[in-house]
Length: 413
Ligand SMILES: *Cc1c(COP(=O)(O)O)cnc(C)c1O
Image (tube, rainbow, N blue to C red; front, side):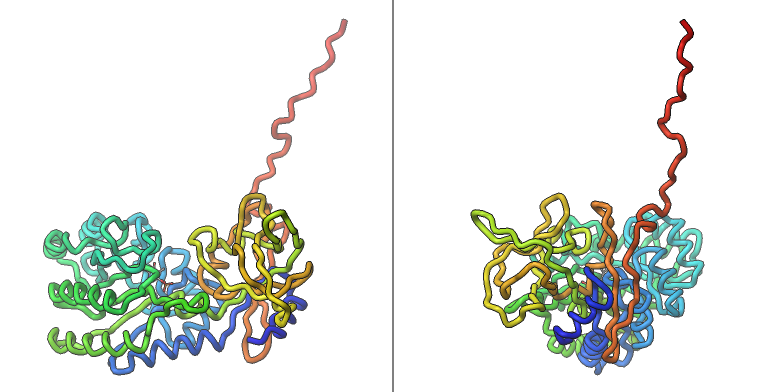
């Protein structure tokens, strides 16, 4: 997208605002699909939690993607967006049996990640096939908060518990239609991914009625210059070959599934905020924008490095800035970042704002969540209104006369 297009969007729809470039999402989808073009049955299930606006879900459906969901509400959003139930996979962690049963009743695929629920679900619904999420105990990436395959992770059934798992399947007579892993959001190394895949293949041999193997996601996209990016083409070639080989061994053409979130939408997103104040202190220059971690929490939560561009002055001389928000708490977007000279009123553009940005936004400090705009065929389309004061009050119950003490009659003397 051109900076001038982004500036026009802030003029038309105000700020702060999230903008999503449809073309970029389509090209990422095609890139991933092409990387696995030697696999006969490939299924991408877009991870709804990355960005769950209905327009984005509809786009994914149109592209032929399935949907990976982690809550019953995401399942319902997916159905509302037009996904067929069988195109939705429900991969929750730590939810109640009742919620899983509710999802099953809607006809979506079920992925179970612990033995307790597996035993209960299999006991009462042996006829409903389920997928099992395995924890291969492979450490992907360096940040243990986003790596979810390691030994202390709460996700998945440990590969060391396979004997118990098999016993449950045998005793309940349930049908296992898929094997799944999701090692986390930071796969730096293709070899690590392939290593984990071998564990999955080994596990898969235990089940005779599989339809698919789901390799999760964790594809890395670059956030700043010099960042490592998962080489999708190389991974595609190596994993496809190995997968095809496995299908031959297994004696059946299985579906290779992925559930990418970040890879599909991260780079398509731009977050635009206006600079309210440029504040020179004794040690730094702060640029305070009309936003904060209530709108974009990743820098504070994960130390994420979102590139920031002053699109009002893209040719200006670069200076060092600390970009901060207006929340009454430390909410730093970037420290000592070189940005084209900033004046009050300029629009800053935060890149990679498609994944885990709007969906993690809150009303902290009683601020409104931003608007969302889709950029499609050279036009901007509002796909979520900016919140208003009514939204802050919605669901609050303003109890009349609360804490008002009855006026006492003055005692007669
Ligand atoms: C969050 C999540 C994903 C998506 O991960 P990305 O790093 O955004 O691609 C995939 N699968 C599951 C089960 C998830 O929870």
